[in-house]
Image (cartoon, rainbow, N blue to C red; front, side):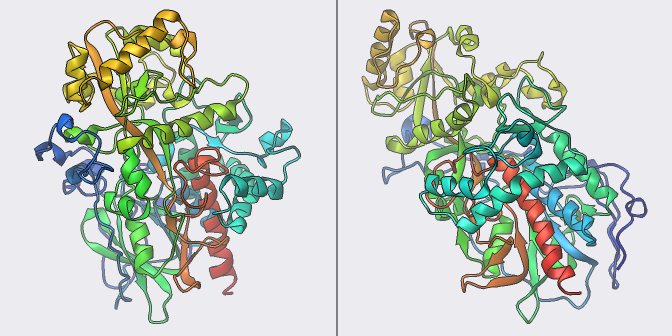
Length: 615
């Protein structure tokens, strides 16, 4: 079958129309419709405007504190989650008639899916890419940068590589395996180390204009704003979508995948999807199906089963597009094994909206999230001080990036798996002096490229007021009232504040991890504010077991024919039992770089193994 012609398919509005792909058999293609005209069932994937939890009775946080009856974590409010199902999704049988034909079917049009589709098409495959949302980019476009430790040409020009220059993939693998406590697959780690830089250079060849950050471990699109990290990767995902279009990829938006198709020999030969959230269509993938639809940050049942530390310690997720785990469940249904058990990636300062009946997934640059990530007095439920990790770059940018995840571990692991921040009425006067950088920088209307930010979040005050109105950020006239309503035992919070104020008056912190003097601000002026926080989940590192060719491996130890997976549908990029998936916040490339690299590897391997090898 010849490659699809994008003009004939009628791709006239990038990202907002379902492309009319080539149709076979007797079933006609559904006409493309504007997103606004489609009636989307409330609560299904793709509908992030509905928050059904507001209609659910949830006890005040003072009554539930941070723990459940078993002393670990409070039971979650299921209505605040888009998904709550851990059951495998069984493959379907081959239909009598296929609706669409292709060589390779890619599930997901985020960072990984865009790269997988573009790479496979570039190598000559006829590609269909299905996406549940109404446009391309997924959660990848919200990322700030790739954190890569070496191998990219721009880094070579700067003579930068880790652990030393010139770049040596084996040396990097040896270091990473030690960091991962030898719980990862060394062949897979070596693959990421050796191909990560190449994948970024390939994206540059496709039209992405990269630049290095102040410290060469960071890579971001050239035209992205330097002031903050909001939607920095949108330029990169836009470029990869355009490259895919030029190479004939057929994109089908608002078309969530529902099941794999398996033939009598056990080979995965296609996909079932809901076109325009309506009728089911069968897509015949003669070469391979590639699962690149992210992980399951927004499926509590899967979190509890496969990443219990995240289920207990994370108070929120910031991935507001998808991440409900259907692709992972499809792989399980096909007999796939799991890799990366109990590993995840989180930022600090996850605000516990669900404790008050709010929604679990929140935009990262919600003003309340950014406010929670500043160096306030932070204690556990026993009143013990907790360390803060500084994100100011100073001399070592890598250490600043580590701080964003290391602080998450600190906030996720106290008794009850929650932490508490407290400050007084003068909090706004202190923010400039905190000078936090990267994605902790508060968003204001005067920032460069502010038009990329959803309007409600262009001023951080809006998100903070939302939290006050919902009593997520508790504002009380006395510390005693705040203490009671946060669920502390009498005297715990007031004693911790009194000790903190003594340090502030002396101008010297007596904690084992002391705050710098410029951050010591006494809590004396009412009203007083307090909020319960935990980790802010942004990546599940448990996923389908793959080999270094990105082929999904079954529980019998054998490759499942025709099935490939990229991160974060796949696992194993950082071993097992990792709270934050270090090094460099998730893998050798950071989370978005890992998705980019995984898609590139999937597209390459699928064509080489299933199409070129079959000729």
